[in-house]
Image (cartoon, rainbow, N blue to C red; front, side, top):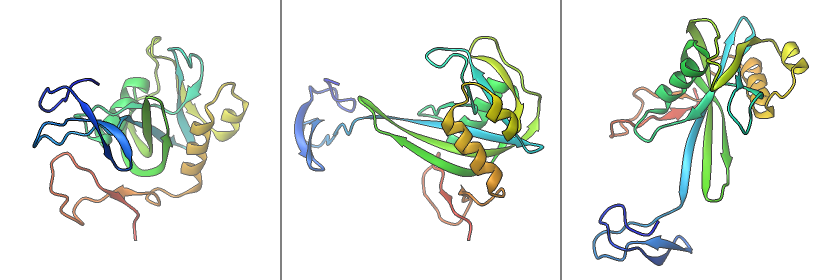
Length: 191
């Protein structure tokens, strides 16, 4: 990043938060670049004690089995993103119940936060598109343990969802506090 995304001036640098960072030095702008990051979301969809898995069709993980998921667009609410990813990757329409885990990955140059949701299936049967996904289905834990190339993070997520009853994770707070901005979502543990 060479230019300020707010005012267009050439970036300099300044110390902020104990580190030297790219920053706009124009009076009144105040832009500081804190690094690049992304947000991803994954979905554990359980039906009849079986978890929905998709098989990746795109490298570098072609052939690997995992829970449906992907990136959250910058103009998209995270609940919409995870429900969209499930539908796109598996053909299943599902609704978020709760959050069962959060993973952070330090990265160079991009760090990532990945939120795993538990969803209930509403309609549709697993299908794959032959491009992004080359397999899809519901699998029991015993079936999953016999499969090759199941992502360990997906296995952890599925086990967690099966061990804990729905609603034990963080849920969307729909009115406990006025968070004041459109597009904000607040999740918390149930009392």
